[in-house]
Length: 116
Image (tube, rainbow, N blue to C red; front, side):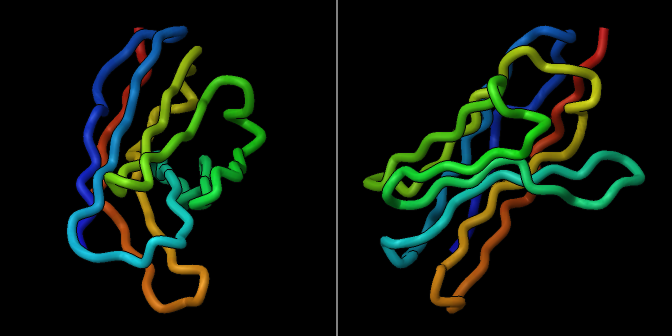
């Protein structure tokens, strides 16, 4: 299974970006898909997750600004990021996890830079 993330780039503060991640290969239909990020010199942190049933969870720092969604038929997960701040600058990674613990896949990361 491979996860291909896309949509990163340079945006000004207050702007928006939309990240997408597509899973290729066979994954169990019930899973948790999510986005994580790692800023320079910092540890990787959770941004948002979504279950197959649509239950979402967000880091406090992005609540009200970011929205995660998924297409179960296409095995894709999307992160809509609005009102971006310089502190959101990081490499963003997508992830899919089997709740039974049978697999845990990461994408290659896409760079988001928020700067004027």
